[in-house]
Length: 347
Image (cartoon, rainbow, N blue to C red; front, side, top):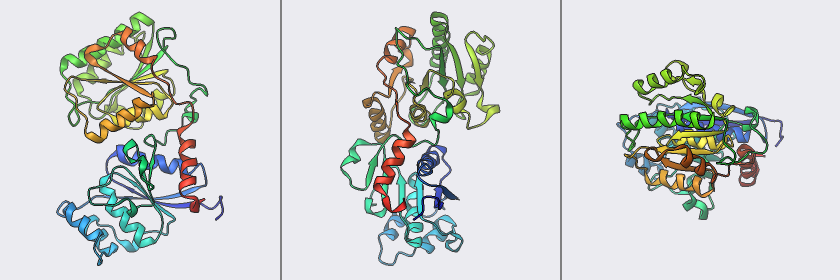
């Protein structure tokens, strides 16, 4: 198989950016090994079709992929392109991934945790970020893939460490909002922005601040007011007007990142960009079991740390930064080599 022949990839994408961005990260790593030609197919399940029925049909002798694709996902099997690989992320893409893979007779990569009752051998490779999966031959345990390339961002080749003896000149603040078991009080938003001002006053540090679709309007309005002082905020990216896809602007210029803990994807992408990352959490915060395992994975590698908003001070923040050892390698290169070793038939 020629390295110059494009790898024909079917990307099955659900509607959640936190999922399909991971799948896009896998494809970006593949593209470092050979050209890729991607066909993106949106996956939206008919909710009248229960998961238990889908799982039972997948394991049945009479399983017929075109029927499941049509009945459960409105995907016409006859429109599927010729392909060399199927890639997807997120629970809603597992069944269609199996269907398309069996129908086309090609390898598959799934990113995430398997639904109960689905065996790993339904996929050629499962990309996980949970150390519990390291004993599985079908799993590859890595940082959640991201298509953001730190080299293209202009990140330094040798990433410095920061702390009390080496204070950052520019910090990024990524703000999420209410999500799952995370609930922010108004007093906590106020405390977070007071911390921003305190760091600028104490260190002369300036901030790049970006909000998200979950950020309350009242919080975004306060940040806009704070951003009038360019000695504190050098750039404010308001999601309400800027839309998605703006994080690379922050990653390219910041020395380190502060991110609200409700957003796993923002924290993960900042780590992938070879940045020190400190998560900040409200009092009302609880992770799912899988999410807690992932945060433990990031902190176990010393790529990130966390501080409750109630305990934020410039001194505590500086000490916490000194504990972080950001990635020195390009994670896309690392993932590419692991994919080549695990799926040599593609390369």
